[in-house]
Length: 400
Image 1: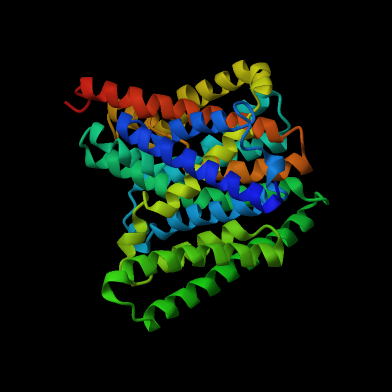
Image 2: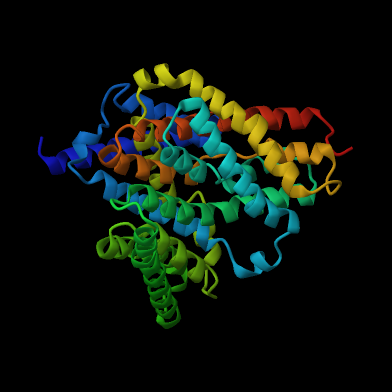
């Protein structure tokens, strides 16, 4: 089988598994990410070994990078300046002070429980600062109807999804520099992330002019708008990667924010998370991420990963919430809801997949730790917060 035929077969296998997982999850009324993980094991090296890294012939990192660019662009696209101006004080403290507590606590926990290197622990802590607004919205009907709690959870998730990828890129740059000095780090930020910001701004300007000068047939306008925006995300990412090598995520986030705050028709059409292209991207990334997990390695570190996840859920998240919301601002029950609803899945999984693939060559001992800790957090929070919390909230009159 030729390399082109093999790649086509892999894409078809991943897309088919992703669609099947999504349809089954819809029927069972569970988060699709759970079944994507299961299907990833089935088609990956731990199952039928249909999807393996070596079969991609060096194209895996660029493919995953383009997929991550689409996802972070979409998240950034939904964050408008009006929302930022109306952000609640509790949310602001949660995404700043609370995020710092999460970063420090998670880093220390990875270091203590898994005996990881400080740079690896810091990278894990950075990635796991992100929470997921999409899954919060998806089971939002099960939450109490309190406006403050819902708004804070959704705003926190959206802001984290935009800021965490950029911060994670900065941390990744710092820990992978060949010359570990402050001067080298600053130069890397200016030459790579700075250029990413510039490229993202240029792509956003081009997209804005394109939308203003184009005249689509009315019935096709929403579809054209969506395709152009996705193309813009990929172009921003690819251009930055070709110039700097590693600034693609920054360029995609920058373009997404700027275009999202531009008045264009049919913006809401692109904002629909469950559109077809995003579903395909999610399927691809989740299945690739699952294929990076080794059962043998998980057996060796499984108990430590479980302790780490429990520590994050039971200790670090509640401390971050209670320290951020302030004494007396919310009831202990409201703080409890905020403390135990912090799902990690879309952005942590996407960014971790890209970084793990790169670390396999740069730091082989760090790659499995990053993959397993993020995987454990994603899986357990999906199980708890996708099933248990909605069930408990339906039985408890939390805000009575």
